[in-house]
Amino acid sequence: MNCISTYPLGPSQAELFSISELVQEFGISARALRFYEEEGLIAPTRDGTKRIYSRRDRARVAWILRGKSVGFSLDEIGEMLNLFDLGDGRATQRIVAAQRCRTRAEALRQQLADLKATITQLSDFADTLERGH
Image 1 (cartoon, rainbow, N blue to C red):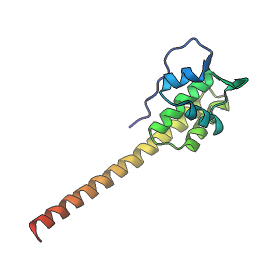
Image 2 (image 1 turned 90 degrees about the vertical axis):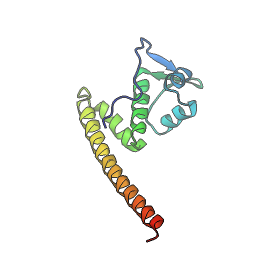
Image 3 (image 1 turned 180 degrees about the horizontal axis):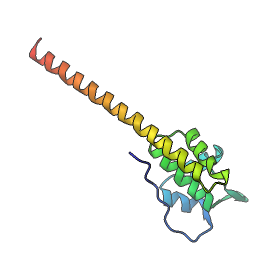
């Protein structure tokens, strides 16, 4: 398993995006975007009550959705997003995210092995019961 983009960003020349544009692009609800804002994961500017999202917000939404799709918590996603601001050309962010993806993949491999063992035990037990032993 790797963390290939589940939510790739399509090319866009736009610098600013409306909530409806991001809702349509990512297939999520406006409520989800507002929640990510409340959690401090994105920071749209305001024009009255209207939210205006930057390219940075758009990229962060893609990261959030990628992370969620592979089982990361919002706290973990937030930690990885904040590494972008270190000013090292995203090097630390990439290294940490890759490491966390590999760790998550290994945990899932172990869960899969445990599930396979449980399935085998259940099948064996069912066979025993059906044979009347």
